[in-house]
Image (spheres, rainbow, N blue to C red):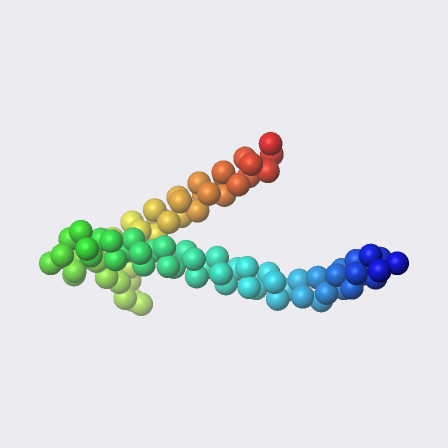
Length: 90
């Protein structure tokens, strides 16, 4: 009986909060992606000190550095997703 009540409460809670959980998951994915891009850019700055004009971006346009970092992060995320999908299929 207690198990059945717990399952019903759990299902109700999950259903009522599904949208909130989705928003949180999407926001954390976006934050993770942006942090990884920033880390790549900071690495560029450390490697190429003195060339900072090539290692920043603005709201108006993305520099080549930003685009390269963004591509690296997208590929990394795709690789992680592929690994995760492969593990699920085993």
